[in-house]
Image (tube, rainbow, N blue to C red):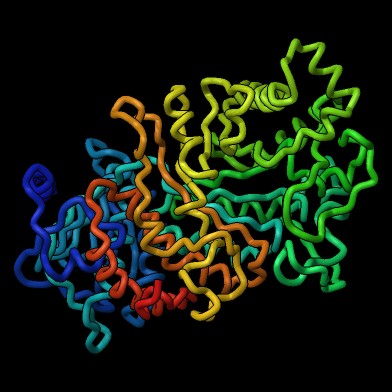
Length: 535
């Protein structure tokens, strides 16, 4: 095993030589890939051997996925590496997400810096297997050595389940798609004007009132006045949340919940109108857009509610980050609210912008005291932020650039490149695209072209944690439609996050046509436009 590691490490230190077969297979593109001699045949007798018990589940997930390719599932067991097997090991001298994959005539070895690194190596092996010929339930893999690790530590995808809700199994399927592409963060958008989607035991009325709207607009938001006259909603119970978080953890994906504040809070205000500036009445929104009704920043009861909600959220989500929103919060009500104006005066604040900063920093301090950190949309910059807040830049890249220049960490998710609820082609009507956000097209090529470091010098670049795609669901009511919007654009984002500095769109396009075969085997419902030569 040490000899194999030395060979692989030597490859990293030399100029990468790309074998024809395998550079056109793996997405995201690996750091280096070199063809060997001969091949290894995977059959029903091949065993996946995990050197430590903690790797057995990763091997089982791989075996389940490989069954779609091979036609039968392999045996997985805890065992020392040996010839003739698929061997999984950890070497702590490697970086956590780094892995080495070596296919030889004698067997297959995957060594990761941690269990997470091994899992990523298995995703690469799965892609290789799906591109290889199957004969009589046997799979011949050509010899290859791959050395690989990601560029960015944060590679994320957001899923809005508030505008439309999806089943637990569908959320898991979303996570499966992320895992295949080595995405390691799942941003779960759980509260909104149109529906509250997480059970909070202290406030059961949120699941009964805030989780449901009376009807839903049909068609384009700004043009339509037609509604479906059907009550709509639902909530994820805490047991279901735990199930999703555990499922993601098995695939080495951290789940980041988003609890929106101070805006996008109408579902909560409908349930508890005393938390708003006017006291209501409010109604869970039945159309899309931005409401002027937001949490009252002047009432202590508002912060009591938020802290109680977050207390239960922290018990469900173990990852260090909590997303607390901060976007699209009009100040109109605050300007007229005596409670908010008194808060501004008592705290010595300049205006309503600083009142939002007070709001966010107060919640952040509460979370920091409990060992957690916040992420907020780029609007949190207005009025000032703490040095520990992470900014998610969505209104273009300017918010992330500003944050990095201030010395705050930023995640680049500009709507210009990363909003995958937007149309995928330049002529959606002609190309038969389903109804979507029509501000401008975000093609696969456009997503791929994202440069997270643009506008920053070398010193400032260290504050860019990574990248993310966002899938808002105003116009997306079915999971087939979700997949249609996510695939293949999530692959383009994944390559930017993993392979930054080693990107080539033409090469990516060729590999995507091969990866498409795995999409088919896994039953994913992807958009056809790119594959049909349409942008």
